[in-house]
Image 1 (cartoon, rainbow, N blue to C red):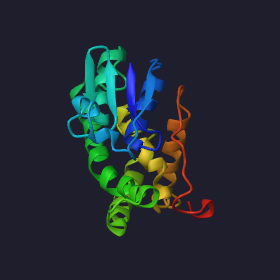
Image 2 (cartoon, helix red, strand yellow):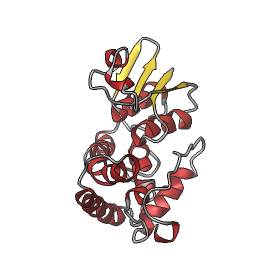
Image 3 (tube, rainbow, N blue to C red):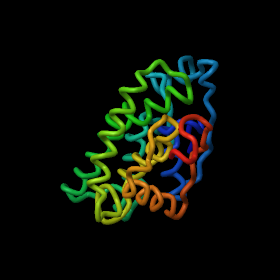
Image 4 (cartoon, rainbow, N blue to C red):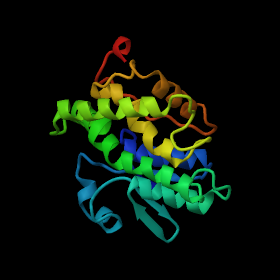
Length: 207
């Protein structure tokens, strides 16, 4: 199994994290984004959108981090815990996968793109989206350990990376004790691997 991406990509990290949580051996293949490797062949033959991450599993080549999480959970988690099969539980997980592709991507992930990679994004708009998202998450995590049920699911994996690193984008987690407690629970999962931190964003006392 091969994972194509970069360590500072939250999209790549969520796949790397889940592979580790499932204890699945894999090779990490660094894609040189600065040189435009992701916009050239042979990478485009794996993902025509020219985006990371990409997973190769035997004859299967799959792009999109959330799709990869669904694939890995469906194929390698016989317990069904990471991606429940019961309709309502599955829908609750899907709700947070949609949030990962929407509000998380346009909120904390976009804010971090500005500060870490100098991406041309509206930083203030991204921080506003992040704050609104975190307000909702803080309420939903009141009295709950996990985003989508009584145990960890791929909803938590999909949400963790960019939310944990939101301060790098200038978004403080100080006002959100329930979110911080949830992040600690993800970090305590057996097999957890961290995404490298950067020096961008808020100072430690502001986080």
